[in-house]
Length: 263
Image 1: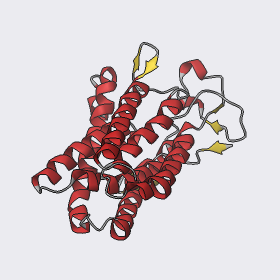
Image 2: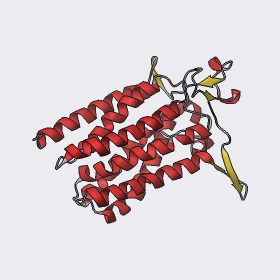
Image 3: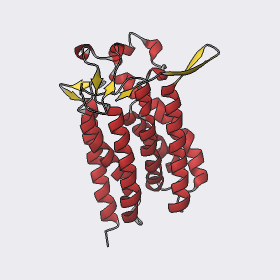
């Protein structure tokens, strides 16, 4: 059984340092470290100096777009509570927004330098999925991103104040943040030990495989969650986006293979 012990690490000059922010910090650090290690050892075509220049751009644009995506989907709430728009420590960032923002900013930066966008996207994919696995634990400390009620051995206790009204009488829920964290770790292993070995000169194969593999897990995990930010009818928007991202990944994989056929 999981029980979130606390959400605030300490207070500094009257400001509370939240575990959510700490986990996002560790997610970014772990992502950067993984990218550096893999680039140096396996991707000689990727300049680590360029990566160091790229990291701040990706991080800033990713966070801004991740928050903007979430705010737009919760427009009715934030139009009435504009002071909450910048309150990242309360949670509310979308990985789909982060991927889009990071990819677009990376395309612009690398395009100006006339560098291979897909080579760098491959390297960033390893770090990104590891960062996701770490960052999801911020949801644990914020008592968010949980699923429907359950009584499994790994059930997650959610305090009454964080429960949706229709589930107020339930104590234990699916720890969907944990499911996604584990899935992201699994995706990293597939990318590193399987896809990388078949990549050879197929730039982009890891990146497009990441898009498809992550989307599969996110689609099914989202079906368990009770806090989807926006629904189209009864279907969570994250599931719809996951389908499109999955298809984009599949198209990209076929493009990479067609460009450089398997031997």
